[in-house]
Length: 84
Image (cartoon, rainbow, N blue to C red; front, side):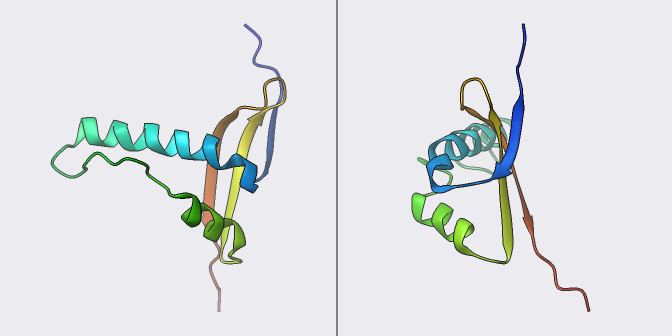
């Protein structure tokens, strides 16, 4: 099975549902593995929180997108640190 090309790019507002779905799946894995530390949530990230991530200059959010289907296959984020 061919996976095609994966594009890495800065996240945009249109990526909310794909990133949110992946975050929900990851959180559910934590809940199942460590129910003593994690509780089930309706949605891991609200749309307003996603918008804040996109608008801040202190955080970077990227997505891995299938060029064939347009599906979000993964995401990554980083915090900008000030070196001094």
